Amino acid sequence: MRPFTLDRPADTVEALRLGGDQPAADAPVRADAQYLAGGTTLLDLMKLQVMTPARLIDIAALEEEHGRIEKLEDGLWLGAMVPMADAADDPLVREDYPVIADALWQAASPQLRNMARLGGNVLQRTRCNYFRSLNWGACNKRAPGSGCAAMNGVNRRLAVLGTSDHCIAHYPGDFAVALVSLGAEVSILGADGTSRTIAFEDLHRLPGDTPHIETNLAVGDLITGFRVPAGAWTRRSLYLKVRDRASYDFALASAAVALDLAEGGIVRTARIGLGGLAAKPWRAHEAEVTLSGSALDEASARRAAEAAFADAETHGGNDFKPELGRRTLVRALLEAQAKEVRA
Ligand SMILES: Cc1cc2nc3c(=O)[nH]c(=O)nc-3n(C[C@H](O)[C@H](O)[C@H](O)COP(=O)(O)OP(=O)(O)OC[C@H]3O[C@@H](n4cnc5c(N)ncnc54)[C@H](O)[C@@H]3O)c2cc1C
Ligand code: SF4
Image (cartoon, rainbow, N blue to C red; front, side, top):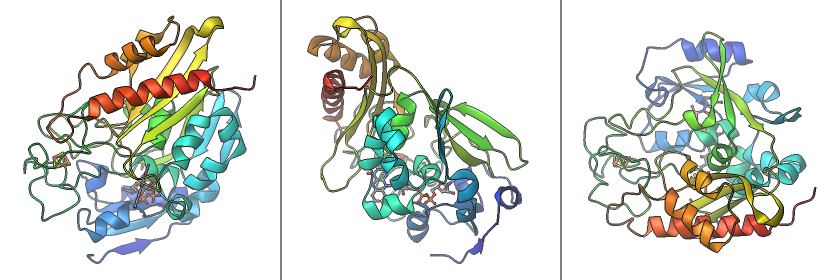
């Protein structure tokens, strides 16, 4: 690991001042100074020398300001500094937004969930092996313009939706898939103190020809939390994760599903996110449209799954993924339909 300095700001104002006081960079992940939340992603990547920030801004003291879970009149607020474990265990989240609790429960290990914060979790980076090793060939995400070794290399885990000729990396997280399915918003403070809110779906970018620019955040931006809108669908929701190893592992395929059903199982609203399969947390809009107004059964679930993967592209090692993704989504839809939900 290279030498770095550590700042411990006492509050948000001081953290933003430090975050803004640095040279411009084309993406926050390539900036000199990085916010340090739980450190479970950032320190890993620093040890691998994939990220080499000169300065860390430890935001632990911001937990009081941005570490709350609150019921809002029209939804749920999850502060960016809430530990993953606390959100997974929270009675309100478990009862009213089970898809979020499920996704967090199945993410990482207990030690990691205790340490990691929700803000850091959504900003975790791909697990593509070529990205995570300086010795393993070209990577446009790690070294822009160097090429992509995964394209014709080991790509079993990598994405089949939203990829480009420059990068086929997958977004690996679980919580973000639940957020995207529910149409959440993310609140951000800029380094100059101005606040803005954007759709969570717009936080992450597709790789295009600049895969190293992963989000629409600017250098110094601080995520303060997430607003999840309430709706008839949030209780009939779940997260289904398929992985190689049950103890803890990243998703090969996952589906976050939230349903509002009328009499006879007719779908009023279906909200669907996909994980482990796409370049960013993926909202399956086509599948949602396909289901709307239909009776939910195995045949209609399969039609929705076909729509979700109509544009899938594979690269050899991950040829199995579209069908795994379709089956995961069908199962998640049918399990959500069968779920007993308290009024
Ligand atoms: C062995 C292992 C297994 C794992 N398995 C899973 C899994 O199955 N599913 C899953 O979802 N995750 C998994 N993870 C990833 C883990 O969940 C993340 O490492 C963790 O959530 C990151 O949170 P953190 O608080 O430690 O972030 P940090 O490492 O502190 O930060 C990550 C990035 O976010 C930035 N950042 C942090 N907070 C903010 C903020 N508020 N505003 C702006 N920028 C911010 C940091 O500057 C940094 O660039 C695993 C990790 C490991 C090591
Ligand atoms: S898929 Fe993306 S992250 Fe992986 S080697 Fe190619 S450019 Fe790098």
